[in-house]
Length: 494
Image (spheres, rainbow, N blue to C red):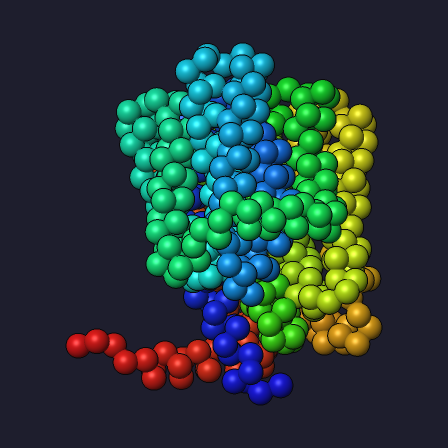
């Protein structure tokens, strides 16, 4: 394939990945502040609401999200407006669920109200982002960055400087999500995507989506089953285990979420072009960029834990498993979106998509089963967190295996080489780089001391990794040279 045929989507991936990468860095700072400043119980409460209870309510946008995205990509009048109205309804459901959950966990009423507002605004944004991604993909990535920047700034203000604790964390989430919802609506209106189609037409679109909901039902049931992990863990263990797992996996989950969001456009790209080769190369590029960070964290887990919060030092053995899960998952979700894009809008398309998305349900059931078994076989907090990480890795491997099994035989040969590089070669090249640049000092309870001992070695490991990749990978060299040539042709304003 000619370089010019893949540079478009790869360049697009680079820009989006850079925006999401900066967003990850900003969110990592906020996450470190939260994990270090909140008590174990408050941190478990915050993560349970924002990562699990909010996800329960987000299943309503999940029912129509696929069709909202596809209809908006294809220019169906009223699709984005209908989707936003449904997202508002989902936000109200999120508020009720979060308030109830926080009250049951014993938090004060004021904290429960703040949690409800944070969850509601997050769910509204989850629905709106799909419409923005369909109309203005780069703006969608920019909105994520803006949300993370605002969130980081407000976390520093409310949690670090003012010391409002978990209430400040919920307030920061509410303000940041509400801000990008308003800005997203403004951008959609600028592209005339928010034209009101009339009540009758809006209801008709909503009913049409709900009739097709069985296609995305597999995804929603899968996500719901997967997020029941907290319920299972609370049944076997306590808040300390929940807090430790979210603390250890937080950075990896940020990477996973960023890649999941940046890969949403792959379905629309393949749907409109049928160019699956460029799409799989985009997944390969994501693995190339993420491997050195994931591997370095996996090779030096205790330093990672001390950087986050040394109180969770006992959970460090789970970090390598979580890192491996993150890499496998990002490749699997990329291939899933690629295969979904190959399903054209024609009779039988809904059934083919439903069969494809059934892979997510099987993977989620595997995850919950392995988790329950692991928790039953262990009787320590360290064992519980490690069992949770094992279940996470089992989920990612199962998803990738099932997705590849459903790939058409005509394209499997095109997937083999990029996937081999993504899952084997790139992490394999990152291992010696991580070993060559070991942290200069043992981890310290002092954040800045641990950061200083990691900064230079981690930078050296990444430079060595990228140099090695460019030396042995002709595809990476070709893409890098083409990107440099394009950058040189850009005319900067004087």
